[in-house]
Image 1 (cartoon, rainbow, N blue to C red):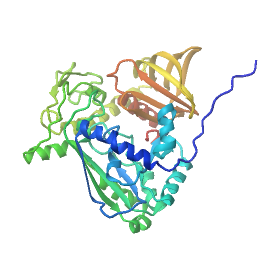
Image 2 (image 1 turned 135 degrees about the horizontal axis):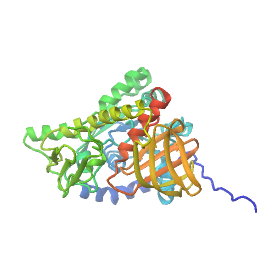
Image 3 (image 1 turned 90 degrees about the vertical axis):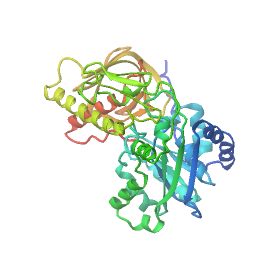
Image 4 (image 1 turned 90 degrees about the horizontal axis):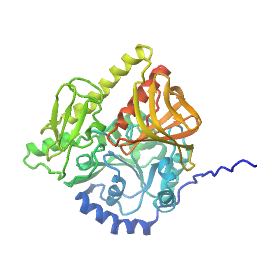
Length: 417
């Protein structure tokens, strides 16, 4: 019997984004999004500016690319993670109508650069979300991927920045349901074409970082102090917060926080807090501090575990389903059972026996939405979906990064988006 032929999928350079499809979206999806999220556009900062230009924005919600396009008359090319192209219908739309430029995780991808240069030649905007780790967990803009600083000199076009105000509070990454309040998109020029062509890479990166730095917690606190806080209507406002706060910020116990309704509490020390109608923790900006603190706690716990040589027990273990495929091929279910992380790497029981993935060979790790862990091991993509929807993908992603850094004796560089 001849071996089964493996179906492969290649990604060509994107077609021009369809103006007709862009108008369709403006007349349908964007109308719906205005109703659902009550968003407003302030594009005075780019009035009179004509494309091509590079567009960067803080990444606070899944649908923010569709909101971002509201400020442009012309459709934009969008740099998009490769995993979205594996979804059949979405992949067709991205490749043929949206003008999406594929970005392969964990390796330099010349297609991405060629796609951006093509967009410039065709006179279109190019939309990039450059934050390290993708969509943020606590409402504050993350640091930018260092390679972003190369783009201005490469393209030699203006850089437009969009700051989303209220987007995190409307859809915290860890939550299960959206909240309706008010979102404002503010557009401004971060770099002129001349600055893009002449500024050193580090200075360009710093300017770009400053242009989209935003914290929804501080923004809301200022609104309240001015007497016009924005209410975000929702029930069970704290449900799912342990997906971001995977450790108690008071006692440091991992996985001790549990959410219920508008509140969350620690089963170990009794710490408790509530999320109010303004999306703040007990009316404060504590979420921004807690989001950073849990990573410090995890670093300490992981260091203790690794210093002990790795105990006989795994550092993390959760029930999940794992899917896998070679790059850019359709995913196939591989196994269902317990995923374990120890000093050596990830392990689970596959259909043909135990499977162990050495931590040093894991690259391109990311969280898709808030609940799917995806990474590249050697030349295969693995996708992990946890059975318990409150399992923290952020905890797993950060722990894998820490263990990989330890194995490689420095920054493993495995987290990007």
